[in-house]
Image (cartoon, rainbow, N blue to C red; front, side):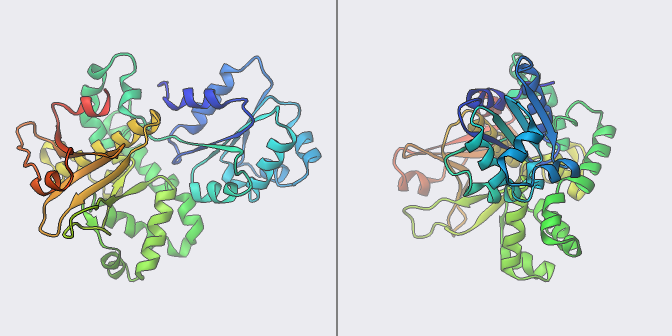
Length: 377
C-alpha cells in the first residue's frame, strides 16, 4: 500500500468539529484510505458504513437525531463511504455534526455534483472538502525519491496511475482499465443524464480524449454529436465533477490579441484516456506523445500543488497569431510559463510577446530529463 499524501491532511482535521468530505473518482483509493485511517484509531469506537447498500441508505435517510444515533451507536469516528447515495445527505450530516459534535464523520463521494451540491448549503462552515486523485509521482516515489519513479514513467503515460493498476502487467492493466472505463468510471454521470443519453456522453468522451492539449470548441463538439452547445457544456461539467477530466482556461491581462475564452481539456488519468480510445501502443510508435506528455505534466503538477496546499492560478496562454505557452501559473502576482517537450533536445522558443507584456515573468522547458524538478521537488 502506498502512503497517500492526503492522509496527513485528514488526520489534521479529525475531531475538530467539522465533517470531512473526501471526493474522488471511483476506484481511486478512497475506501482503502479511510479504512486505513480507521485502523490507526483502533483504540477508539469506530464504524465503517457502505452507503451503496440499501439497508444503510434506508437507515440514514430519516432526519431525526435519535433515530440516527440509535443506528450509528456510540461512536467516536464514523465513515460513510459513497455518501452521495443518500438522497438528503447534507441535512443528515448537519444533524450529526450539530447534535453529536463528539462524533467525527468522514463522508466519501465519487462525484462532486452528487455529494457536493447536496452538502454545500446545509454544511456551510461545518465541512472540510478534500480531493483524492490517482497516485501522484510523490506517492510513488515515497522515501526512495526520483529513482523509484523513472522506471514507471513509460507505464504511467500508457496505463495511468490508479492504485489497483500501477503494479499490474501490461496485459492485466489493459483488462483492468477496460473494466474501469466500461463499468465504473462514469456511472454517476450516466445516472444523472439518464441511460438513454449514454451513447452521446460516451461519444463526447471519445472526442475529448482525442483532443487533449488542444483548444476545444463547444459548438463544434455539439455539431459532431447532434446536440446544442449548452448541452455539451453541461455534459463536460458532469464529467469534470466526476473527476474524469478537467478544464484549463486561457490567461489574459494585457494584450488585445490574447485568446480569452478558450479552454483546453485534460484527463486526470492517462490510462483512462487511452482506454477510452483503445490505444496503448508503445511510446516509440505513438503520434500523440507530445499531448500525452503535456497532459501528464499538467495533471501531476495539479496533484503536487493540491497536496501541498499551494494555491496558484492555472492557465494556458495563446495569441490570435499563434504565439502560445502550454501552461502558466500565477502566484502572488508573478507569472511562470512552462513548455512541455518530451525530447530533451527540443528547443524552447521564448514567447517575446508574453515576456514583454508581463515584466518579471519567465518561461521554462519541462522535458524528459528535468520533469522531476517540476513535479517532485
